[in-house]
Length: 237
Length: 251
Ligand code: HEM
Ligand code: FES
Image (cartoon, each protein chain N blue to C red):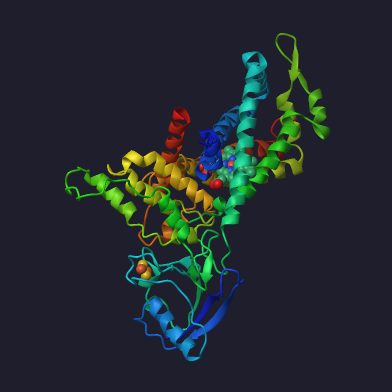
């Protein structure tokens, strides 16, 4: 008898299996966003709190913690993007166009998932060059340092963020990208429950509400930082 | 009433097809939508032309044969009914009505408004049945089934396989159909023993037929003439995940 491919392969190749991968990787990113936001908001506490937090992250598990997080996040993101691009291609190929077509229930956000997704992807790449790798025009951020109580020096992450958001184009791009991310999440978070088979018509409105609240928190939280810096001169003499 | 119809005409599967405009004159408001098309077809026949081809059979909402996208919506914007149950009193004199086939790559057009939905039959053949020993019929009450299960299975079983869910879906996904058929049998004691093989078989056949994926838009629910719930889709997602998990450890 011919050997059938392993269940994991056929799972990935199936429509439902791939959607479940999208939901699970999306869930990882959804949790990450909350953790990332909680840390970032320390910028409102002050320079020391924010820099201590950055120092803590980079020295968690003797420096391994941040790498474990990076591997998990990057793997999730790559799987999420590969799966959603493949799904979208299949979806487009399955539909043949109507001359007249009405939409009754699908939200705008649910229909632009691939475009909000691609914007977020572009944003993530930019964001990593900006604050994580600090490449090109951002290499000067490496010169911003603070002295730790033990006499060692480390990056002045606080000052880096303040400088980073003193540029209007950067702030505008953050606003656009975060807004589209929240559009993505307003559909995505509710979708997780349906895709994983956890929702019923009774609980569906609840998950929809949860998704809207989550997206609103993400939107207000992440955008408060560049707005406070650029327009309200947070951290500037 | 007098109406303007924009009807999709297509000679065969390979013809590109186009919309043609027809004037439907003196249509009684008590006529059904399909009777309106019959009247128009009589006029077309009188002029010695090829009538508009469309599918129908029972004309009472039970067989699932009628189709048609009416003003952009499968079975029209009326909820919970089939095209054959649409009546002309829902339209007004002077209206323009767009009539197109149920479109999907997996539903190739045969002619005009007639599409080939045999992809649904092949999905059923891949698991939408139960294996039973034939012989004398078992006593009706020998297998106890709770009221909740019986009701939920019956709700799913009301699917008439018309394909409106596919036609309405932005991705031409067949998930509402497949999930209804699977969940009808999966939750009953007669269907439960083959649940995993059924779920995997039907989903794989669905993918092979070229249907798209569910993106949780819920357009299908809005057009289903039997108001089948997308709860069945959630259930199918869960059952597929569990069936594959079991397959991966047992094979
Ligand atoms: C922080 C980043 C991101 C988060 C938190 C996120 C989250 C999510 C979530 C929760 C879903 C719903 C999963 C489901 O339907 O069950 C989803 C769907 C989707 N995501 Fe993302 N996503 C992110 C980045 C991206 C990127 C970079 C792309 C680029 C291609 C993308 C494209 C999509 C698409 C197309 C869908 C819809 C898939 C479908 O319904 O078939 N996402 N996302
Ligand atoms: S013709 Fe039978 S359901 Fe419409």
